[in-house]
Structures are given as structure tokens and as C-alpha cells.
Length: 146
Image (cartoon, rainbow, N blue to C red; front, side, top):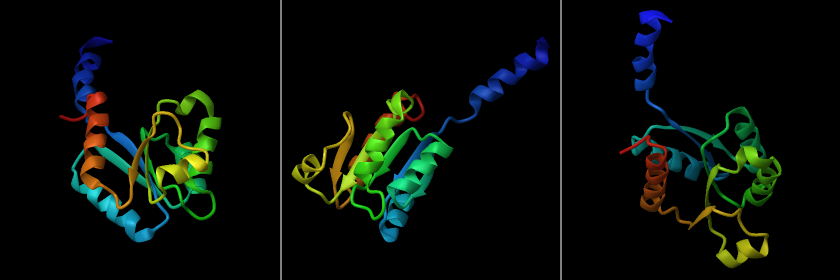
């Protein structure tokens, strides 16, 4: 206790909270572009990347993200298999916000098993302004951005 412990509280509270974002995209140029554009939003985000579903699951295991932005069509483990695997992890990932950006049509996605409940879907090319609005909404919901 004592005054020193009390004085430490405001400093800790003032440290900016950040949203952990995982970007999953197998096309290197698009992955770089996404990361660059997201960085340009100057939001309190910690961005990590993965190039396929397997790598994404490893990253998710290392540091649980708050928000997952993923492609579906990828070599190795695709986005469908990765999302199904995540569901298999149980309640730990129930509140993980998922945004899917894919060139597949909604019908093709439905034919391949669909997306998890609550996932947001955007068609490629990536609609950056809509993506930014959604990320800002997620930050506001957590009290992390104006």
C-alpha cells in the first residue's frame, strides 16, 4: 500500500490500450498494402500478419488477437479450415471479431460451409474506407478510440 502504490495507478491507467489485429492474406503485395493502409489510419492497433490459415492459427495461439481480418482462398490451410479450427477451440475465441475479405461470391462461400456467425464479409477489391469504419467502430466499442 502507501502513497507510492496509489501514485502508480493513474500512470498505468494513462497508458494507451491497443487492439490486437491479425491480418491473414497469401498475396504478399496485398498483405503489404493492407498493413500500410491500416498503419496510415493511426489507430491504437498492434498489427501482426500471417500468409495462410496454419500460420494464422500459430499467431492466434501466440497472442490472442481482438480482431481477425482474413482472406479465404489461400494455399495450404485456407480461411475456411482456419475458421472451423478456431471454432473448435471453444469459448476462448467466441468474442474474436472476424472480418473476411474475399474474391469469392457469397454463394461460393455458402457452398463451402459459410462463415462463422457474426463474421463481417467484404468483397475484393478491399473496400478500405468500409474496413476502416468497421475497425473504428470496434475500437469505440472497447473505449479505445474517438
